[in-house]
Length: 115
Image (tube, rainbow, N blue to C red):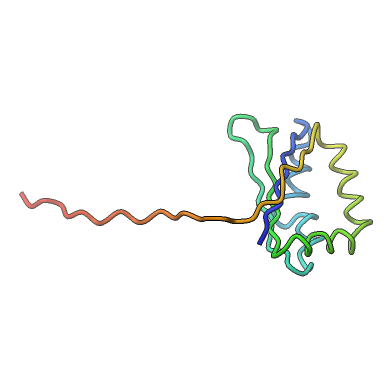
């Protein structure tokens, strides 16, 4: 599994449009939702800088992502054109593979002391 991570700075007046297209159920998810190997997208928004986003697209393999781009060239170009109008910058941070995962163990239940 790979996660493709983009850093995007969105123009202040375009945040609503951006979130509708790239958020859950938006055009991005609809475009790739039926593509082989597509697992979904996560949108993160910086709590201190609302124009700063990370978009994480999860695929079974990088080859699936590349094939989906080839299969949807025109639709992807349209999304990119919209994105150009709404953003100040867009940077591909990389294609990441999971190496390790940590979980949080639940705290043991403590008994209240009897008085």
